[in-house]
Length: 274
Image 1 (tube, rainbow, N blue to C red):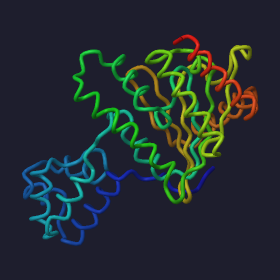
Image 2 (cartoon, helix red, strand yellow; image 1 turned 90 degrees about the vertical axis):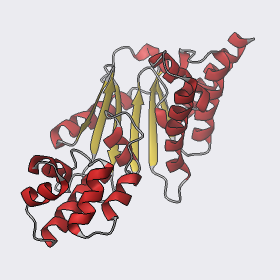
Image 3 (cartoon, rainbow, N blue to C red; image 1 turned 135 degrees about the vertical axis):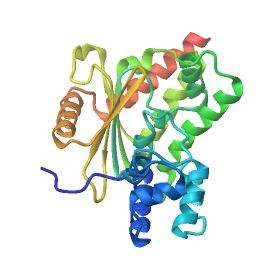
Image 4 (cartoon, helix red, strand yellow; image 1 turned 30 degrees about the horizontal axis):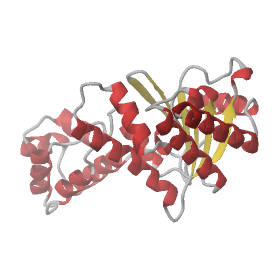
């Protein structure tokens, strides 16, 4: 069993700091709740990282604890940009030293071009305004900044061949998306493998999977499906996900074969456009 601690999200760190400051002020959760005008149960949720206080609550916490706006300012930095089902995984993604991702039908969000991301969001949310689409595209593409940092994570990308063939956004958008992936692999920014159709059934057929490993914390797994997402830190479940990934990877094409297939698929989309 992995004895390392479970990695903490930023909201969990916020809650831990709140608990430490409350104890230092010699207040119980009930007493702090009275001053914040909320229940002790809600204070418990804040401290466990399950919920974040509203801005007015954070300001009252600062007054009660004499923290000079500390919790209100930190709350502004914790504004959740992501879908709630993915928010915790997005925070941990920024801390990972190794990311192993598998995609069954779509290019992983970390690698999407703006045009590809826009096509995905437009398909998922047909009633969304252009302004909201623009905001979502910016949020998604900003995630890729971790690949440009001073100590970027090692990123393994395993794609089902179906990802290469579906013309999301049309042939031009798809060709540009696949060339970006190939360029990242050529530049050794990602490790790229493709599971070709001829493999048939494989252990990861049911959903998207992302494995994340950390410098000083136990690994986690994130699985995503229609309208659902689950972050797992139970060691047995994470090991099962790691095993499934390893088994699927053993059936994949080599890096060079995968790169050639991705570039060939990009050319196929270009010809379809013409």
